[in-house]
Length: 221
Image: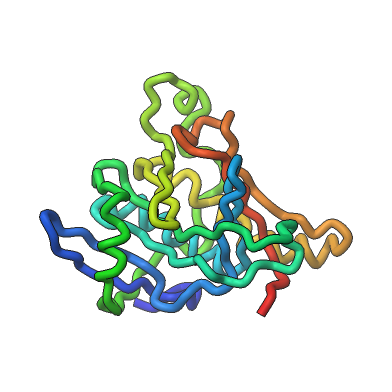
C-alpha cells in the first residue's frame, strides 16, 4: 500500500533470544529531528516531515503492542536557534507498550544485533487524530489511571512506555506540529516559535519528565 506522506517506511527486524521482539524503525534516517536531554525536561526539535513520521510511529506504538518502535536520532545536526552553546546530550527514542515488559538494560546488546531488517510499508492516518483528549479529563486525573507514559534512559536511549490509549491520545500533538508549524513560522517571522507540551499536570505523564516539542524550519547541515 502506498505510503500516504512519502515518509520513510519502517524496517522490521526480528531479534531472537529468550523471547522474540519486533523492532520497527524508519527505513531512512530522520535527519531533521533531535531529542535533547535538558536534565529537568526533554526537548524534541523537528521539521514538518519528521513531525509527520514521528506522529505515525507514535500511532504504531499504539497499534503494535508487541513491538519496539525505534527512532535513531543521536548525532543529528541541531537547529541554529537551539539555545545550547555546548554540545547537547542527544538521545535515541524507543516507544513501547507497557505489556511488553522489555528491560531497557537489554537494549544495548539488542541494538548491536539489529540488521537492515525487512522493508515493509504501513498506512497510518494522513492527518492524525485531533489534538483534543481521547481520555477524559476526569479519567486522566483519577488516581487509578494506568494510561500514563513512563520513561527510562539507558544506553543513550529514552524509553517511553505507555498504553495504546495514551499513545493514541498524544500522537495528535506531532500531527499538529506538522500541519500548523510551517504556516505559523511564515505568518509570524518575528515570533516563529510553534510548539506543544507534554505537561506534568495534564495527566498523561507518570514517572516521566515534561516533554517540549518544537517545530524548526532551519537546520544546520
